[in-house]
Amino acid sequence: MDTIERIKQQIEQTPVLLYMKGTPDFPMCGFSAKAVECMKNEGQPFAYVNILQDPAIRSELPKYADWPTFPQLWINKELVGGCDIIIEMHENGELAELLEGIEWPEQ
Image 1 (cartoon, rainbow, N blue to C red):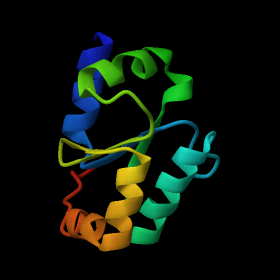
Image 2 (tube, rainbow, N blue to C red; image 1 turned 90 degrees about the vertical axis):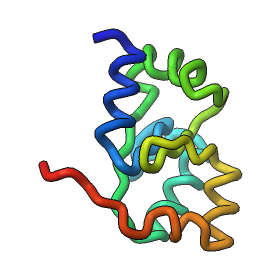
Image 3 (tube, rainbow, N blue to C red; image 1 turned 180 degrees about the horizontal axis):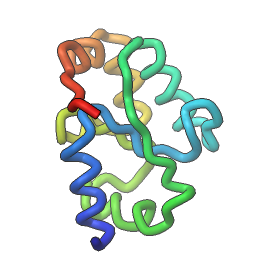
Image 4 (cartoon, helix red, strand yellow; image 1 turned 30 degrees about the vertical axis):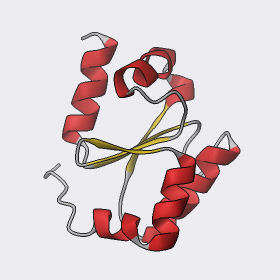
């Protein structure tokens, strides 16, 4: 499976997905740390992909998403945005609204 197909599959199968540098417990950049803090404060589950461990995704996702930076938050197959947008949406309540009622597939 090529990288774009893997990205599409991840986005299709994961209702809330954060592409980030590092992990939620050990973010490897300030922007990823701020995005994770907002997501954790929302109290809803989210999945993540550590792009530092997958150079192919790190290189291809910005082209696929037409969004040049990380982190990238995807909710229900739609790109929400990066760090600044995540913070703004968290602060004004829009992120909570988007996360409300998210259905996770059975594992």
